[in-house]
Length: 230
Image 1 (cartoon, rainbow, N blue to C red):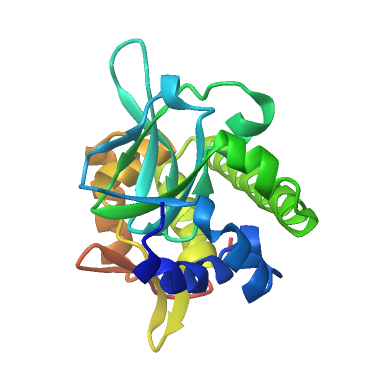
Image 2 (cartoon, rainbow, N blue to C red):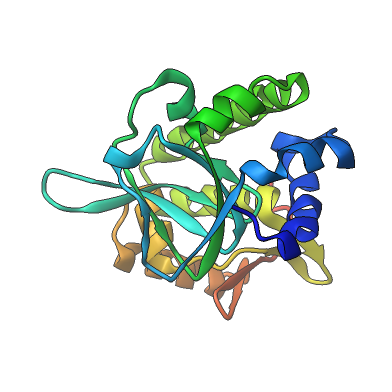
């Protein structure tokens, strides 16, 4: 469970999470004891398919990826979760497993709550229940966006629209463009849009040569705002 010395920090963190939007300090005080924190090193498995339906998770810091493996052994990223994102809640609602593995993309800390607490504490709170519906709706919209991206036959268009979407969700304005505030590799981009790493790298290089993209320490800066309005 949450260490007493970390209790205040955890409550402050939960206040910023969409799932707990609108809850008072007192309401968070009442539920903070149900959460457990774990640290995972880069590339460490957080859970496998057979572990789904046991916990809901929240990324406290770091970044994780949801990976599906084809029958040929190829891994494909189907989602990336960043600080404040939740995952695993759907399996706690419908009781079905998720055919995927979740791994740490970098060193991260994950907060979890087990199935019993999720159903008997969180889902009994009307504010949290309403927030959960909004969170799941947002995830559904994100899935629709990814499906739309995958309809493009051009690798250039797939990468462009993916980065444009990252800019809308994870970006912020800087003097010369929009900085995507998560580190993402060429391999991760390739897996998200269903192309090879080499093709992703060539496309990113082309965007850079066109003056539409700048890359600094794995952070992408979208130049020419009009070009990225998609």
